Image (cartoon, rainbow, N blue to C red; front, top):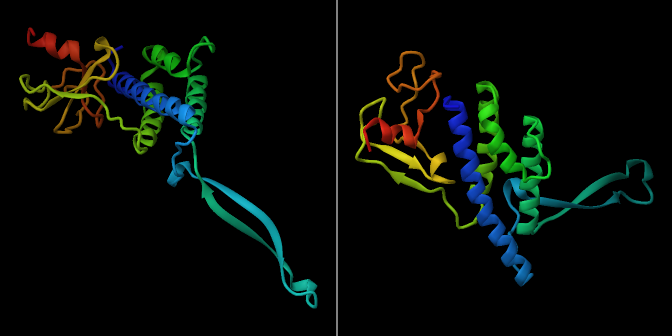
Length: 214
């Protein structure tokens, strides 16, 4: 399906696939060395709470209270990061009712995106983007593959600032405009079937290239 919500979700899923590949490499290296770890911070912190202790003297048992001591956040391993990502993607796949639970969750998500209603594809895109942003904030040594397409004018604004989102197989590559101008909905010059007002423009790369005979 060529609806913009489906394309955005597909692009995010393939970028997430690439990010998780970098994460898997970290896990393998960690397993071999048994020494590499990621200092927990922010949303991936793993706080450990200590035991309760009584505050107050023996002469004043009524005023004694329980205080919860917090110990410093422990280090989180790359394997734990991967496990957290696996769990999150499994939940997304379950929400999509993606079949074949024996396949990896992200594979099922990618296969299921074209069959979603546009509104559901939008929600899946939001979930995938959140997961991608989280992994992208970690020192994985990974960044999404992006190529300028400066020889071709944007179907919407005419400027030559198109960017190819080149994660995943070539047939899944998409194109966005670096100007960030949003779709105006029905009648928009972007020519996108099912154009949605306020959504970032996106096209299949093969459609953009084919439109200029390239």
